[in-house]
Length: 229
Ligand code: SAM
Image (cartoon, rainbow, N blue to C red; front, side, top):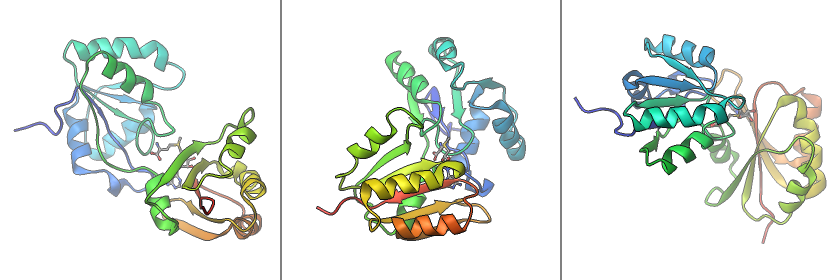
């Protein structure tokens, strides 16, 4: 029977809240890998257990990726085939993975990323804001460079996407309103694919008022309309 992927390194998107979102192909790739590289072996271990898959796990996260990358690439060059998963969503999207992908490609290792769950695509599409062109900003820097990054986006005409943690959401919304103006349209999707999923749409001022009245809880994607041309 043919394998689900011919590549030596396969990035495997995993559910962002709803376990049913794992794809059939993701399951096949995980089951066929010599080992699964995981951002957190406990999180990925639980997923594999849920899927009835038993594979060796290799820990790979922001604190050891520089140390690990060389030996992992060498193992793939010697013929081992790895799947890689982050805690949720697509690896390398605001998660570890980029370094391994870059170094594997440099070393001539065949790399593939499966299509699958990621938070920003459903948030963008559900926002109702233009989605034919958009910019993904991920997490804003927490301190140094935050304001400069925002100022650089002041005249951005494409729809903008940000990841934000619940305890920084209000601060971020105030800053967005200062830079883009109270009347700029936005949309906030929280708890995508989970029981309490909701998308709130409105001006930045309205979104700020909503989350001032309702304490932000859960995971959030903020979508902001671009400046009109
Ligand atoms: N790799 C992931 C992806 O492909 O989207 C992103 C990982 S990043 C560490 C986590 C951030 O993604 C959260 O702080 C939140 O902004 C966003 N996120 C992840 N899951 C989400 C969900 N179910 N609903 C809304 N936002 C989510």
